[in-house]
Image (cartoon, rainbow, N blue to C red; front, side, top):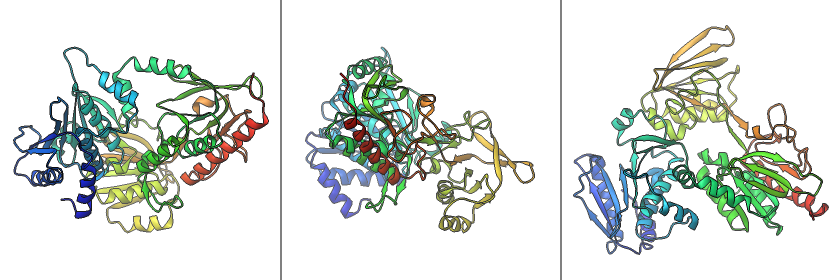
Length: 526
């Protein structure tokens, strides 16, 4: 089940277990149960003095197993084999159950432990995953930690490939999909802070008051992607008071699977890269404020004065200079049916959701690099892929186009304008598109639609505050300066061409240096 190298690494991790706990498995005579037992036996053997294995569990889901520390009431269950992207989640769950402290801020731990369900109820979470989903581990680890720290939280992690009938019955067409007490709670990547905020209704008001009380920054960065992270590191290294307000640290990088073009890093994936960005920023004295969305920018009354940024929670942050690095988001098709069937067949992550469409017919909207890469990946899983490209030719790199054309279960339709998504009320059944050369409207019967048509800058909140291009990008000069004194911008939200991670990072560094130059040339407010 685990090769020698992986067993050696796991043994080293399990040395950190300090408190005894028990694994209780519920098994049957299937191959999946046999493989689960082999994995659990390996884990128990590697730390037999602290871990006890029982196989007399009677849970309805088989194979599954619980982790429970001796003398506690925590309720964490894994249903199916947590391998692939979820193996790290399993290792962390083993360590946390065994008393190893999580790398989480103490205030987050306090909030988890203080959570109280409504009288007569409980927090019963079920999270469905796929082993190829790079967005799932964050959610799994958040809910696992909550179950380990708070006995009133119950978490079951369900590997969708093992429980396909259950996935079909609950009409799960996107992962991670989280249910709370039987009702849909969330879909997609969700952090532990976001989950707590949804459960603790008073958290927003407390957070707003805490942020509003902060002293003014020298440089305040809005956004935590590669541009924002680089800006934070470069600003902090100047010894000035630096803050970062980010809705989701890592930004769009979190949704990227393979990264192979960041110079000096041969290959990594988005979540790892995003985690490395955050850790690098935390190495410096940077005030990192997560889960914060900006809604208004108020320029300083006079040059050198304080610029204000109002957040969605009502708090206002002040700073002598501001760097806008809000990045971009997936572009929607904006056609009838798209919003109605989002996560019900309309999806934006082929790596996460592709396995849920095994043996089915799907479409990929977009013929750029991301669209063609998605089609190539999906072709190995689904029955058939149709690529719909608006233009008269694909825009992807030649090497990708050659690979795509070699696949027997892929069709490419050019000059195709998607006009409507069709469904039966609960899931996608097809789409309509117009042939732009003849204006004929055609229909495709399919069960999944993967949208890959580029990005939109996250700048709606800045309209009227700074100069924007006709595409909504922040207009910047060679130093990252915007049309407002003291306000700089960097990354995918700006007019700088070629939206690439390495370019965003460089632009973030440039903006920080530009902001520092601005600060030393303007007097501090009285």
